[in-house]
Image (cartoon, rainbow, N blue to C red):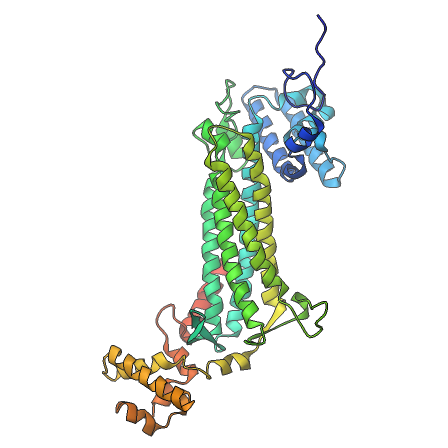
Amino acid sequence: MPHSPQPPASQPWSQRFETALHPAIEVFNASIGFDIALIEYDLTGSQAHARMLAHQAIISVEEAEQIVQGLERIRQEYRSGEFQPGIEAEDVHFAVERRLTELIGAAGKKLHTARSRNDQVGTDIRLYLRDQIQQIQVKLRQFQQVLVTLADQHVETMIPGYTHLQRAQPLSLAHHLLAYFEMTQRDWQRLEDVQKRVNISPLGSGALAGTPFPIDRQFSANLLGFTGVYANSLDGVSDRDFAIEFLCAASLIMVHLSRMAEEIIFWASEEFKFVILTDACATGSSIMPQKKNPDVPELVRGKTGRVFGHLQAMLVIMKGLPLAYNKDLQEDKEALFDGVNTVKSCLEAMTILLQEGLVFQTDRLNGAVAEDFSNATDVADYLAAKGVPFREAYNIVGLVVKTCLSQNKLLKDLSLVEWQALHPQFEADIYDAIAPQQVVAARNSFGGTGFAQVKSAIATAQALLAASF
């Protein structure tokens, strides 16, 4: 009986197969082009697995040491550019194992004992994401630091506040900036919470059912800094909830960056002129030499949809998967990797934009709040403080505004006689009450835009940041 041809040496699966993959399918099937990003996490996870095998006397201590040293050599080869596996490796896990066997011989073939690529890749992704979350949290803190620094410089700079994109009430610019501090603080906290579920080890779950070898899953988890292990092997290899949770948190970060980006785009327009863009963060037009375009906020606004798309993709990938591992899960990595990279680059770009890319036009901002009816509520509050029921005061102010509009005047332009003709409770102090500076200062309730409250909020934010760095 003739001997069946052996599968190619590059094939990481069993002698069950007689021929090689179709070349196009080999390319289609391979993930080495993107999962190489996991290589250092794969090496670290494999070193912990080898040490656990030796601890449990599944392999010898000498073999484990050979494996650990061999994996460390691969790490150095990768960092130097010497180790660059190609499509024939299929994925990063097989590439590492094959190179390890080339370096140390038979001991390298024992590394995969009591392990599957299913729990291996799950471990790698969690190690990767744990590291990336920490890096994103640092970038969030850097972004917040710039917000607080700017806020401290602009406590008494005023800006129109809007509802429905209509002038509503004047604000401290610092108060406006600190709203984004609060948003990004929730982002930081969300990542902290996601990290708890990222930091659980699936290693030792095997392909789906565990292993007959007497492994110690907690031992390897401890070596890798995990806080616990999956209690169910099926769940361990197939769970990607943590990746979806991360992309949810990443999407909210992008929502907040995009909201600020939108405002900056408005502020930089000729219609607003609240900020001037510096040359460090803007480009010009190819045919209109006078233009300076807000590229950074526009790109951030655009990239937000990209992260949303990755979240949607992950939800769709997972929604119909039966237990346990399925090849569909190969698609999680590019979405996750790009989501991570996009959030990091956008945080960095927006931090630079705030720090170096724009200059607030304080005269224009302070002037803007004096040229509208955003102090109308304060007229109602003025009357209410004198005993007039608020709803009655509200209606009176509506008449006041109507009178001003008919005469093409602002509230500050009315004479005291005109004020008192509208209601006898108006006195000379109405002019102080509706001055923009006083309007802002008066809103001194906790969390309000009053200057004293804003200074207190800045001090609280500075203390939080000081404790973080």
